[in-house]
Length: 311
Image (tube, rainbow, N blue to C red; front, top):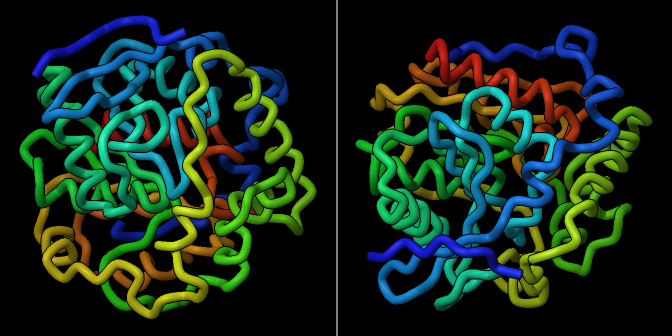
């Protein structure tokens, strides 16, 4: 494998109050630092395909697996830069065949986990913090069966554990996720539409993401993605008993960050496993949805840093 660097154009859950964690400070939330907005796109060649990635910051490697229909440009720059400012080398990437990466595209989370493994190997990384959001969170859990020896900590955001759901997803998600999205769809999918504060956070996050105007990653075709999504909630959205068994026996610390009103991945499904997953910690934001790290980018990064430092 050859690396090519070039420019390319607790087990106990705690419901934390907005006051306790604080919404992103107004001064910090106005605009993201330059880092993630202007980070160059680089590539690695691995197993006959090219994986596109970006890297900001220096320190502990933190590899991010993005969401359903996500790409390099789906992450809030303030979240990435806040992580970089806390001693992480933050690495985002496009899955095989999606965005700026080549190869045959798929929505299989185990294939996505293999992408993460190949990227970690190509970049000669030893121990990494692996973070996964939504379907990327399922991929991050699958990674525990593929390269557990290189994962020091697992951070999951707005995702679901293996096994039958204690609480089903909401049909509204399937409607909104299967079409070309406008800003109101973003609010529905990733925030809490009934909360003025969440709506304001959605606008701020949207504008920060839109600040990047060069070297953009092509959107994932929503028509293609919708074919694999289905049109109704599933009673067992992640049917993987071996992965659940790994979660029950692993010594790797696991943090899940969620919103109290996640349309597709209700946090109640994690709370139902409180007494079965010995290394699991749960952080739940009130009046938040499927993208809590975009509603609370600064405090989410701070919690991740504390989790990794003390875990």
